[in-house]
Length: 190
Image 1 (spheres, rainbow, N blue to C red):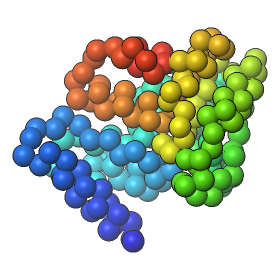
Image 2 (cartoon, one colour):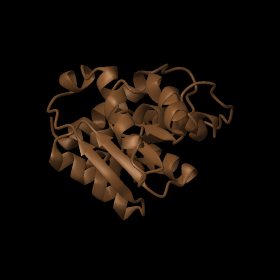
Image 3 (cartoon, rainbow, N blue to C red):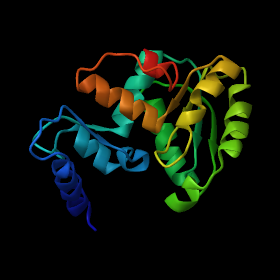
Image 4 (tube, rainbow, N blue to C red):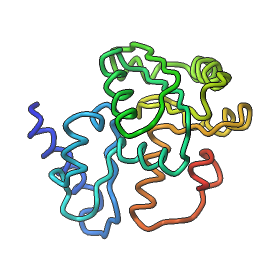
């Protein structure tokens, strides 16, 4: 599938969601795609449903980090090094200090989704213990980390931002919803 075909498919898919009902915002839930050309085009308004704003995961992550204002980020991704570096460099270009990073070098979404929550707790915990960091960014919508955010934040006293959590938060904000969410970390209560 070409990039143009992929973009049309995103817009077509968005318009299949409750086609006869009002929708306030759509979210594009692919971190790696968001940190590439597709994210650039969504943010520039070229990929659109025509019905509501479309938020990509990169935009959501940047907005979340702007809100939390970390001074030293630990970046955890399941990506191969090349993709991990793209994310790290874009964070740096936006002015975020990535003080520590870890790329798990997993090559497929199927394998990423199989990373155990125990492994994620161990890796995230080790990163959050580092004195150079005051927050953790877990970047990939396929990682099963959201249910662990409150536990990590409580144990280490540092905010955790995950792709899915940031996307939900940003879509809610773009849709005009300001209510706090009980679970899901400091960000969803911001």
